[in-house]
Length: 185
Image (cartoon, rainbow, N blue to C red; front, side, top):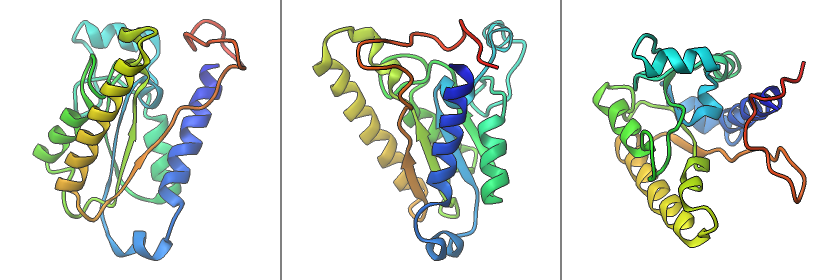
């Protein structure tokens, strides 16, 4: 499941970058800012534990990533990718909030009028705390996503902002609660 989710996230992020008008994208030089949760950070368990212990970090918000999504985005688009993703990130319930990671990117000078793309991938962590309360989950998703979009557009008004969804990894009545239990070769 982890490999499938990883490949699906890479494909979705890559499609977001290369899709649309080539002329408009080429007309705005600059970087890509990537923010999101563990699907785009993709840390392994040891990396995650080392990060929680304060021993290891490699994103610009102090989290860990295997760099695979950013490396593929750079390979396909040629743009430099500034990484602000973090396992546990959410739009508004727990972990680092996406709008705050974008504000950090702006403070660091990475999210600016010359930024070409902003890719946001989050939302699953906003559903867990509310269990079956769909209205509460929707509230945090909508409010947090609106805030993240406002921040992205404010600091990078010329950027293409893409919110990437999650791949479907189960059939109708099943759930995939973790991708770390059964590795797929």
